[in-house]
Image (tube, rainbow, N blue to C red; front, top):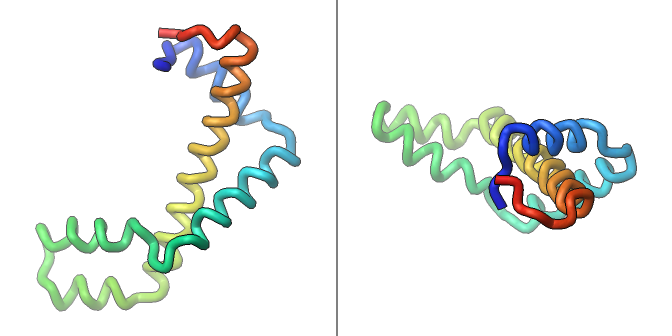
Length: 103
């Protein structure tokens, strides 16, 4: 399903106005998914990307920096919450518009 601009705006409005209970369920689901991983999947990809621009000792220090890991965790959680909210909103949109494709 591809959304046109009007549909995207409607979906975002729905996502921005989800009830608090729905937001709590989304947060719990995201937290459960994040707890399945021993390491944040963003960190290896980020370190691999950084090797293109920086030397290994600096990257190793970055990888061992707890503050960086916490920031990456927060970023990943926020991204997952945003995507999950939009996924719920898209389902609401699809139900409202009879499951039709809005291309």
